[in-house]
Amino acid sequence: MSLFQLLLVTSLSSTIAWIAYSWVCLLLNYLKARKVGIPIRVVLISHGNPFWILVDRKVVSLFKRLPFGNGNFTRYNWRGWEVEDRYRSHLEMGDVYMQVTPDKNWLYVCDPEALMDIFRRRSDFPRPLEIYEMLNVFGPNLLTVEGHQWKQQRKITSTCFNEQTNEIVWSESAYLANDMLRYWASKELVKSAADDIRTFSLHVLSKAGFGKSYKFHGHDESPATSPATSYKESLKVVLENCILIMALGTEFLSKPWLPQRLRRVHQACVSFQKYMTEVYEDEKRAFRNEKSIHRNIMTSLIRASHEEALTSGGLTEKEIYGNLFVLNFAGHDTTAHTLTFAVMFLAANPAVQDWLSEELHHVLGDRRPDDWKYGSDFPRLKRCIAVLMETVRLYTPVPVAKWTEKRAQTLKVGNNTITIPPETMVIPSYAAIHTHPGYWGPDALSWRPSRWIAKPSTSLRSFDDEDIISPQRGAFIPWSEGERSCPGKKFSQVEFVAAIAGLFRDWRVDPIQQRGETLEGAQARVLELIHKDSAQALLLRMLHPERAPLVWRRR
Image 1 (spheres, rainbow, N blue to C red):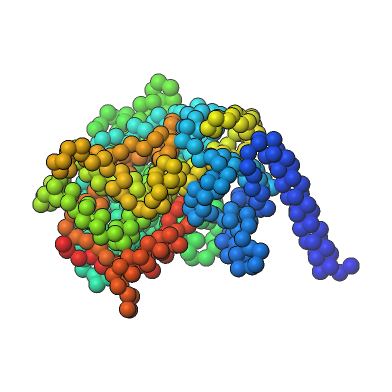
Image 2: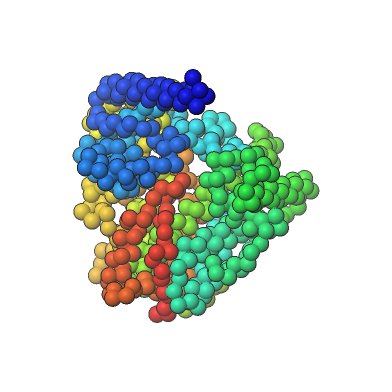
């Protein structure tokens, strides 16, 4: 037998063995799922299969063109299927159902009370750490630890998100939004809105996270800077290449034979780590000397850790770096993508822009952004908050996964109690619970921010009498719930509201009309693009927002 034949036989044998093993695992998981007594859908390839993740959308797209291509395989087995499916599977099968795969079974839950029970029972339904391990880029962090480590890290990191930080976020966001608007207003059309919003969010993080303030430069005017010489550029490169860094690791990226682009990413990682180390050492000295210094998230984190170490033990240096990376990663992309969605929705809904502008003029008057006050102005901008709530309702950037680990768990769903087998993934159905007509009405799939505003009971019209409606607990969970809820929730809300205020008080945005297209047709096209072009790429985002160029005009 030749070497080629031997390799061919070995390859075929390995493939057949892998397929046989997968089918056996699929059968065993199916038998486990049957015992739960709930509806089942069988999916032939595991959601977490690394190779499948690389090709899932392309393969599913090909299968959908075939006469037999509309089944469970093409409906459920690609990243982001939940956003397209919304509440439909739960309408067909009820508030809870199971997907069976060769690796694990996935339980999907769309019942507010059951979801709140899952979030409360943190030890019964922990996070599956294997999914989050890739976030250990610079060290262990809130998303990659459990038990005592998690409690300690949560206690320390929570102290960094305070009203002093929110003041910084408010003033920096208002200032930068004004700069970004000036840049957009100077152009006949803006194709780079998403890129510019990422820059905006990066600069807000730079100020609030590290005490570094930068002037806004638009996508077409940003100066090229080496990540080795600029903290801002190193953070930008790290955040833009998060998936690559998490997948390959910083050690692999250090190989000298890699292409220049990958070496640049490694250079950024080294530069960012070096900057964090310098600040860490400076803050340690300041703490020992009891010196008062400017506060930002990094210095607050270091100081809180040192203070905690005096009694019960603080964070290690690596844990501080790990949490700073995760806080920057989570705080940057989530807000940037949400603000991009909101701007696109507003471009397609001019009446909502007018509705916003009414409130902004009532609260802010003609005051310059420098004179806007976080303490008195932010709480009154309820329509701006409503735009945020409605946007994350339809496009939640970071869904959370749970699992049962090594023990079976019981869960009450409606009037029934089910027993969930060990090692079962437990998935809060964000896209379903956020759009279910039973909780959001017949227009649940429509973007309508006014649904969040409780109108005054009297006939007299008053903006200050309006209030934000509180939905049923568990029916709205974009920042998660319970002890594991997002510590940066208020941070993101303040940044978003200040940005919307800066952009829409005196200006309006419209989509650029294509040849022969009416403005209404252009608005409908933008809504269609949001719906068809949004997908999960680590976080939920628009893939090609540049396909809907915008124009800004003064009111």
